[in-house]
Image 1 (cartoon, rainbow, N blue to C red):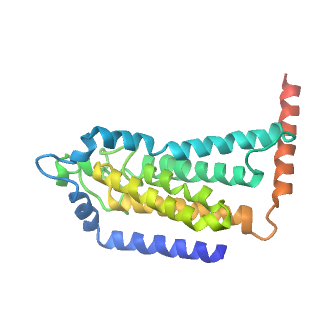
Image 2: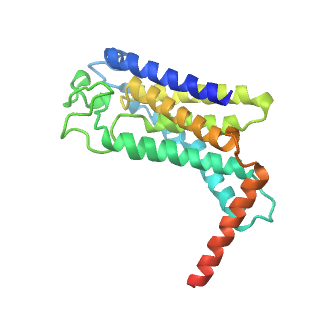
Image 3: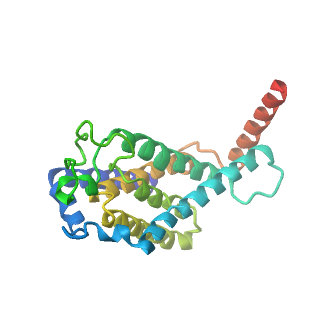
Length: 248
């Protein structure tokens, strides 16, 4: 099941990336639905929409911080009552760091140099539109660029805690995470902040990384069970405590 999921996600990512590479006009066509020559991307100036955007990453931030707190508790206070299982804390923290933070925001967005919709000439800006696969024109965007969407990635990361839901609730939780990701992605397109390819590939790359980490922690042959994971974190915390005491 886990390997099949990885294969499906890889195939879906490759197929969607190919379609959006062959037909880059899809990016412009979708963004144009939310733009007019008179008002531009009008939704981006609506107060309620700005509030929704600011709040949209709170679930990801709260759950990521909770995983960090739980990991610290497992390491340094293993005898206390834990509010999150060891493997769950490892899985959530690893995925939120690797996908939205490192690969998406630290990797793609800082190096791909793609201009945002609101910045390109087709929508009243001064910069050149480029398809997702092409590095941006030098001298345009140099940091926090359009490809891929950090907020779509952060929303898609909610699939990670959804995977840990009890079996009767897992599918509904994953569907809710998918709907939330679609809503956040649509809002970013409507704001003129991202193209369709930015949000779709940002979400798919995140889901693929989540599936890889989930397989490694929960499904890979020889993966640590809950007891071994908790013991490993406690041992790591003990070594770090001893090192700190020796340095002091």
